[in-house]
Amino acid sequence: MGPKKTRTPRPAVRSGKAGHRSKPRGALRPRTPLLGFVGAGNMARSLAGGLIANGWPAARIIFSDPDASQRDAIKKRLKAKTYAQNTDVAARAQILVLAVKPQAMRAVAADIAPSIRQHRPLVISIAAGVRIVDLERWFEAKIPIVRAMPNTPALVGAGAAGLYANVRASRRMRATAETILRSAGVTAWVENESDLDIVTALSGSGPAYFFLVMEALEQAAVAEGLNRETARLLTLETAYGAAKMALEGAEEPALLRARVTSPGGTTERALNILAQGGVAPLFAQAIHGATARARELADMFGSNA
Image (cartoon, rainbow, N blue to C red; front, side, top):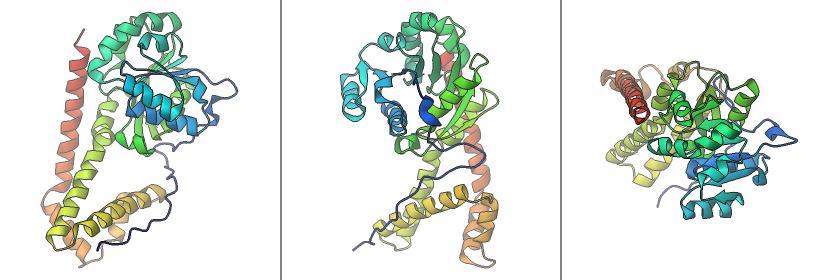
């Protein structure tokens, strides 16, 4: 029989200097802008759901998606208005979130370009690897654009997003974009658009790195004789606890690691083995490779002119 799973409720973790945990700051009252999502997939639903939970009226959010099942999911979950045509949303929204796959962005941008040029909304793109210069070229317009790189934990309200705005995005527009992305996690602004490629490699792909570590720890414990259910529970709770300590404390991870490493103890031996195996350089190589691939993909998407 496996372990009894008893957990206390987990409060929202608040970050330090790097970003901000939602809630949105007042949800732009008294007149909330009309927010439109082009694409009604999981990420769009998560952002909209977080905003609604924090006070953004569902009546001030609209979606477009050619997939009827996606539109049905929006209606059932969020009670928001949906359209089959992207142009219907682009012609109405004051803030437009582009939540489509990167490889589909050029076609979507061409479709809604006339509406963009006419209404000139604030555009927020969450499509990985699609650069602002390419969006402007496809729109044939110089408009305020914010690029965001969220990650999949946003689906459970624990995301981390990097943000970059072009010069036409005012301070108020930047704050609006931050409010939207913060509805599903923390945000951090980067100084250069190219930094978003590093964000993609770090937090965009990062959940998979931690899942791999969790998988390896669980498998190793099972190999030593622990039953799988116990190994998984302890692995996941240890990962959560370590992240919570790092987020809520003022100490750097290196100091936290040192404090749990007793000289001559089990932790020291394990860490020495990991160091001998080159775990730190291996992660450096992984981040470098993922960053390079992000730049390659951005070149590929932008070259489809």
